[in-house]
Image (cartoon, rainbow, N blue to C red):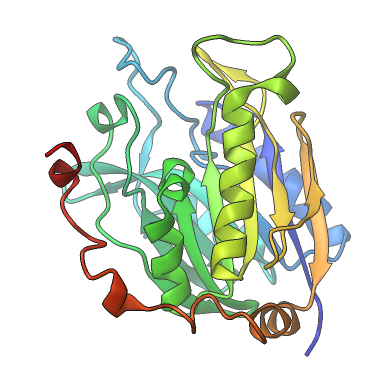
Length: 285
């Protein structure tokens, strides 16, 4: 077994693809120089996120990119010997998806379309329909996007599919009401951090969380990129500012140690909660 050096980014990305690629290239090279082999960039880092979550008129949204198009090949070329995860607006079958891609110099390793859409996001994107882990040179990875992590089933599905590392990329803003000047005291930031730690702990997996920082349109982002171990402990974090959270961990050993005595996946009792996937409407009955 050997240690894996990984990193999650908090940074400001916008609409201009060339500017975004310049920033991505600098971040990838900085990570490479630090020995990082797995790097997570934020949701919608190629082309920026939405200007608001209220379906703001006049926002054309980020440029739609094809999974097999030149922009993703460019990202793959930048990654070279690293594994890089990055968010983008995916164009497919006449629809747009809020997607995240995992690449190395060999090409696309995995792709995920955001399943859970908050507020008016569904005005801009179609929804994905599942969660699947996939193998990479640095281990088996499962990806999700932002609001996906508010649902325990998302990370659990990935863990049950063998994911050793959960990577969640976000454009997670500060609260829209009862706002505070100090982002460290923001209640949506606290939720962001709680979800990261809970998803790692309940599935006993390594967790990598990237996010936007700064301001874009009406949204003020909370940063807070981090690396979390399978016990829910934060190994590295950026705080609310832009930065790169870097940590080194022997993933297989960490998982074996966490799951040795109290294995949350092993000790499940699916027979005791057969109605777990009941329709949302049943909650209001």
